[in-house]
Image (spheres, rainbow, N blue to C red):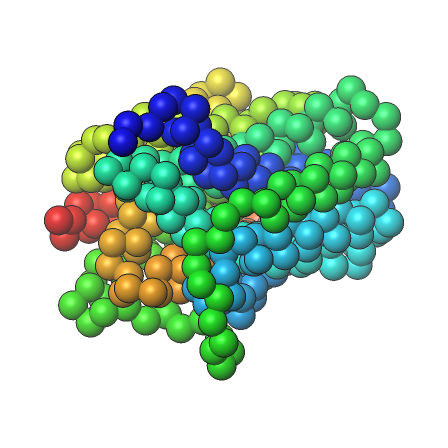
Length: 398
């Protein structure tokens, strides 16, 4: 029996509902990036505190991934996605109520918890929904949509936050109020999509970072790549506004949002455009793009040239996007049956450690060293690590 176009659309609708929810929840997690200078003006804290506030988000993500990122394997994808979205809505309420540092720390930790539950769960759910709707389709399509929603959302958030900051009244409250309402609507929509896992009773245990022994080398190489790539993302999402002011004398909130948007947007675009390219070719692209992009970032900071800095961010972001997609694809492929969510959660766990640990190190370094020195040392280290990780993955890629 042949399916009509309307039948196909009906079967793929749940997939796109989850994809949009994934995109917008991820977007909300980076909305505060261009708002940090406004919080600084209001509360009078230094740049180093911004890195602590940002790291609080990453700590929430890592803790959530470790404790909850894998439980959708037996509690159900849909249930955990709804919970993740509602936790994100709770963080929006906290942002609406508190604008001081302690309140920001709590709100960011809660927001991080929502992302920790969301990422692996939504990635696994999208793959299963797509396989159910289009069983003959290459799995790379669902992986590309999941990666695009993940990084595309992270790109969209700072742009939205910058628009609120520069063009709308009371951005520190209005932006969070709007997203609180959007998130509640998303939770209702996701509650209506099909479940792809049969819920079972199982004794709870924290996340295990365990893969088949024969695939351990592949997992370690992919995790190393994810850690290094997210370190670059952490630099831009935590310090983009401060870098623009301190090095380029550019203090527009929208410009800060655009800067982060370009980095994450190029990462998302690379994932989609390279979806059907052989993995070894993608990894070669990642190595070259990361190397060139980080050199351009360093050159732009030294010149100083904002255009060169942004170009480096775009090229480096594309390289990291390809690198991270290959890391996720590797994790998904080597996962044992029934443990895909757990293996993906382990990969995201490592990636978000890369988001938190280097940023905390940067915050500490900024208390004793000039911003330009810290930036250059960081860029050199991340450049070496990302290129090495991409080449290592390429050597062992199937």
